[in-house]
Length: 68
Ligand SMILES: [Zn+2]
Image 1: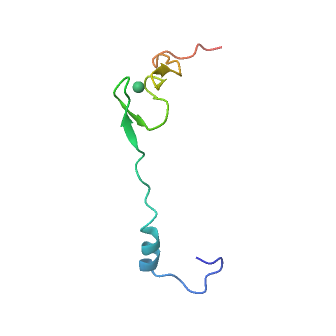
Image 2: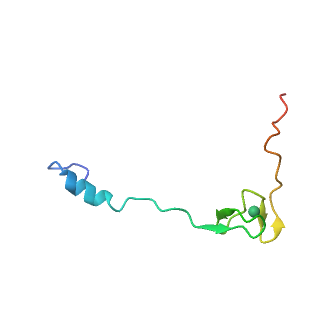
Image 3: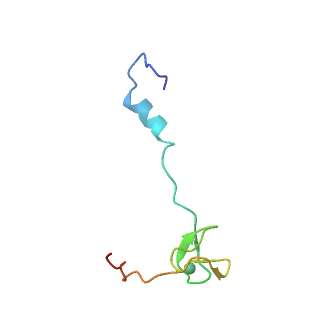
C-alpha cells in the first residue's frame, strides 16, 4: 500500500493481501535426551541438553528465589 492511498481498498483486496500473512508453526523435533518436542538446532528447554552435553543447568521449577 502506498503511503498515501488515493482510494479506499475493498475488503476483498485487503483479505487477498492478508492471505499470505499467516505465521507457520516452529519446526519441532524430538529431544534425543528427554524425548520432549523442542525447536530444532536449539538447546532443549526441558533438560538443557544440546548434542549430548548439558549446556544449561536445570533448576527445580517449584523452588523460588529466596526473598532478599
Ligand atoms: Zn531434552
